[in-house]
Image (cartoon, rainbow, N blue to C red; front, side, top):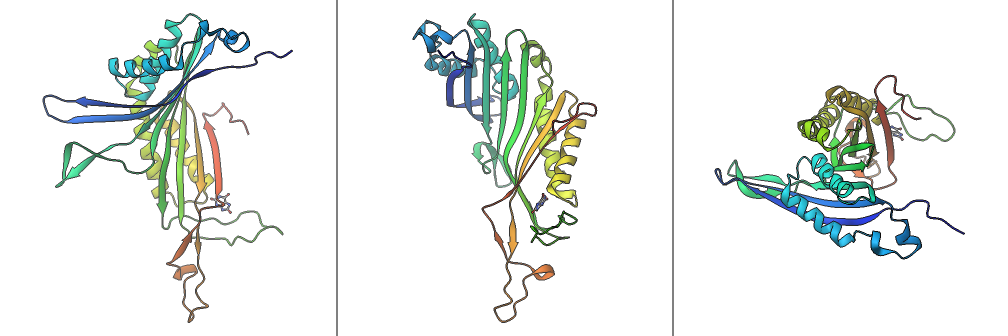
Amino acid sequence: MSSLAAARYGKDNVRVYKVHRDEKTGTQTVVEMTVCVLLEGDIETSYTKADNSVVVATDSIKNTIYITAKQHPVTPPELFGSILGTHFVEKYSHIHAAHVNIVTHRWERMEVDGKPHAHSFVKPGAETRDVQVDVIEGKGIDINSSIKGLTVLKSTGSQFWGFLRDEYTTLKETWDRILSTDVAANWQWRRFTGLPEVQAHFEKFNAAYDAARAITLKTFAEDNSASVQATMYKMADLILAAAPLVQTVEYALPNNHYFEVDLSWHKGLKNTGKDAEVYAPQSNPNGLIKCTVGRAGQKAKL
Ligand SMILES: O=c1[nH]c(=O)c2[nH]c(=O)[nH]c2[nH]1
């Protein structure tokens, strides 16, 4: 005999666009999101006994996402996710947890003749602002906020030397290299007791996002990087200092390599070391460096 060990279900990839029209100024502001809501609770019989009476249809979940987006602010996404998740737990007595994932796509206001345009926008690449909101009945709301797909490159100000050398090592030490990565940064908030507490702290979510993004970019640009590891730790440390309600900060940074191309075989062309100008960007393999940084006394799991 088998038994259901875990189950959750819901609607994924619900694409939502919301416009805010400022009637006074004529300026419009848009938000585009991709939402996933998964529910947990007393739903076992729907799997084991074909009992659909416990199933809130995923189609109804999709409808609820649209209705909630119409009736409430969709920013910050941490608050919208908390409102949405709390709805399911409070509305259905047999649903005990709602897991909401929101990917917010960037639409940046267009500049036309040097002025911000009232209703036209540009998508500046693949970067998104993501949140995972877990509303758990009787426990509270866990929120993880993140930046994904922020691709950056610096053409100098990065080194990598002093690493372990043995019979497997071919990499040369370098005091000047290109550093490029696709930033995935996330920060876990301390648990909130419920929606009222999330609402009470709502300004902190955009502030933490703005700080995390600015710290990531400034540290990347200004640090004379000894390694991806050392630079990402500095970023995480600064975010923890900027956002007191954040418990841990996590980075996952691929090292997008740019290799020197030796052209000396062609008429002695100098293109290595200090003469390197033309490089070959690599797609794979790539380094992948991760860390989770917590506050002192709250040691990360190694
Ligand atoms: O910043 C780096 N960290 C590494 O661990 C590593 N390994 C490697 O080959 N190059 C790099 N660069």
